[in-house]
Length: 437
Image (cartoon, rainbow, N blue to C red):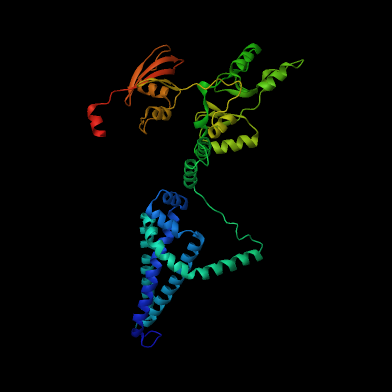
């Protein structure tokens, strides 16, 4: 027999108390999960656009911290009530010790299902809908306990100050999505311009890049031979205006050092100039897979301005300069020696473009309003042309290919590289056009 006399008579009031605790606890549990899934910044933006559900939620969350404190207190009260009711029910029932233990275990599992699993699943599937329905109702209950939660919060703040801890020092975690939403909102309201927004977006995209993404390909590298004459070195410096050059011995895969034009010119003014090898700085080799963020930090700490990128076979894949990394964030950086930026995609007329072989397919797709399939491995127009040809064309030839609804007529091809091509969109089949409509 249970501890309480007349145990069966206690079942209705205990059951009623447990039911009331569940009725209050379940909505608060769902609301707590839903708040974790939504962005307050996004909600405010939707409310500004007139979205009715977002307007209701935002009006209830004018004081988010107080709202969360109210949820925590009500859930604590409900959980305590549920635990006491379970224990009283087990004691009131005419069960053995083992029976009461099993009843308690079963009750805990049922409470876990009703107050956590089910509300959580519902809130995860439709967080905004849950908040728009529950928040206005729960706000009334939260307002009732606000004096209690506010008083407790005040006592905690004073206690923290006794230990010289700043109670206002809270770490606010803002997601990348929220920052992007704030940028969009700021641009719409004129708080930031398009250039500032692009720079901030580039900072987020920067962490996704690798050395292979930002490097100058080996075919575009300007190299100096370690045994080159001064006339050739001077001519290369004058023609390119570059400040540093990789220097090779046998071939491009045998980089022996980096030559600084400043060091070279200072050396020419010496009475007895040193050999070129003695002017070279030790090359800094990196794999293609290293992230741009790590590379930037390493180059900063090592005070290196140029890194040689090597492929998986140890050959030279390209090079990365500190300027290349910075340009991924702030855009192209020009000085008086840089050639004027040449457009890689030039519209010639209706359905005709002149495109550089080095133009990226993503930029071409954007300019033409098309989309290349995800499985296409080529990254540039030149790469696409070669992937469609069964043989490598000879220099001076002008092959043409049709791919992905485009007709590509090569204009100039030199050193097995497509320099320029004429691109036009092929007529769309009548059946396909009808399907899109």
